[in-house]
Each structure stands twice: as C-alpha cells, then as structure tokens.
Amino acid sequence: MSLKKYLIIMTSATLVSWIAWLFVFFFINPDEAGFVGFALFYISLFFALVGTFSLFGFFIRVWFTKEEVIFRHLGVATRQSFFFSILMVSALMLQGADLLTWWSVPLLVIFLTLLEFFFITRRQPRRG
Image 1 (cartoon, one colour):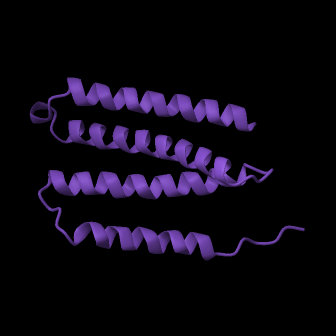
Image 2 (cartoon, rainbow, N blue to C red):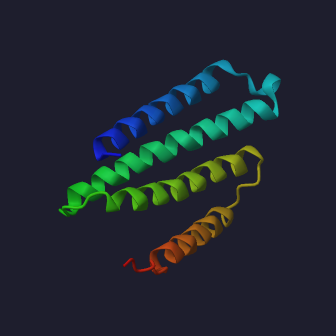
C-alpha cells in the first residue's frame, strides 16, 4: 500500500470516528442507554484519538526528521498514539466512575512508559 493511500484511509477512518463520537455525544442519553451508550462513547472516542494522534505524530516526525524512508515513522506514531489514547480514555473512564485519584494517572503513565521502553528496546530479527 502506498503512503498516500494509507494516509487517505487513516484520515477517512479518523473523520468517521469523530463523526461517530459526536453522534454518540449529542444523540445518546447516557441515562437511558446504559452500558451500551458508555461503551459506544469510549470506543468511538478511543478510535478518533488514535487516528488523530497517529496522523499528527506522523506528520510531526516527518517534518522534524528529514529521513528519506518515512514509512518507518508510521509504526512508532501509531503505537504511541495508541498508548496516549489509552491514557486519555482510561483517565476519562476512571473519572466517570469516580475512581480518578492523584496517583492513578501517574501509575498509568509509568506503566505505559515502561511498555513503550519495551517496544523501543526489543531487537528486531535480522533478515537475510
């Protein structure tokens, strides 16, 4: 798949996710929808954030690093956007359940940072 095609698909999926989240936000009553309404809210927000942060992170990486092979940035940007979205949605879920404390977010940040360090330091097998 070409980079242009990937970016078009990712942008389209991100826009659809934001539209879905806005639809849930404005048209679904959380008192009546129950678990399904909350699940749709958090899932659509998660995918919208992953797409947004992934595209933003990719373009920032391409802009600041002048590498010729820019496909390398896709995996890192997507992984980090996934982790950051987990952080944000988890904090919102904890706040919604009145479980958000001053120490819960730093613990989540430490866990996700350690997970990122794991992915950074693992060795890729050599080909050929």
